[in-house]
Amino acid sequence: MRILRAVVCLLGLSACAHQAPVQTTIPDAMAGIQASLARAGAISVSHAADWTPDQTARFKQAVRAAQCSQGMADPVIGTVVGNVTLELSGAFTQGGQFTVGAVTTAPTVGIGGSASRTRGQQISLPVAYTPLSSLPDVEMSRQVGYETEMLAQNDDARHSEAMRLVTDREKLRARVTAMIDNWPLAHQCLGHENVVPFVGVRR
Image (cartoon, rainbow, N blue to C red; front, side, top):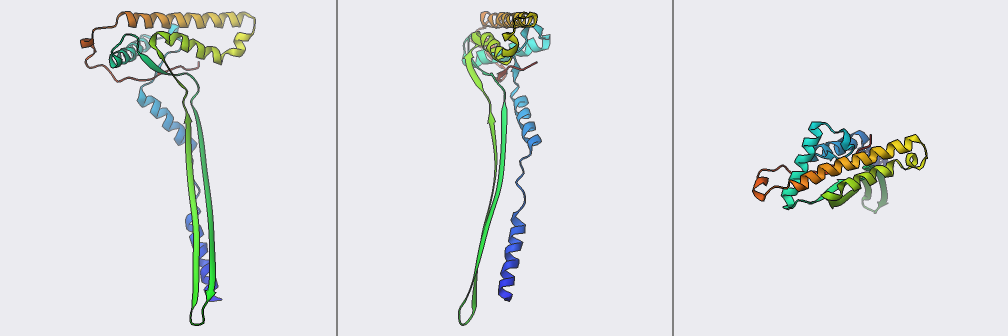
């Protein structure tokens, strides 16, 4: 009987030691994604008609880096074209067993237990690779996808939004065309910045 009590106590202590919950902290995961995008130096290509001089300068710098990296006026660039989604999961399982047996001379005790802990994080990042010259069409297509319901209405709001999208695309196209037309000689690329991703944002 004493042996049985001892076994139960041992299993209880073992269970207490392994039952800490699995931590899947949503704020930490979200902050990590935002920090990664910030470290990547992502450049927005949305609403080109409303860019400030600083936004224009950063766009030119990013385009020039891509051109210099690939050695061509119209390089292939990566653009985030949809929502970045995050999925977190966590689980904790535990199992244990014990057996008590006796031999004529001395009792034998067997204790077995197992515990497993899993934590998962899945990030979905829709990226399109396209020539720089096609970037205005890619960005307009992304924005049209977000505004399908508004553009389906036949009213002033629809026409106004459609005009804004066309204006933004043409402004972005003008900036891209200027960068392609002003593609420098190779020796002018010395010391260019690191290549960074382009992103579209919702207003």
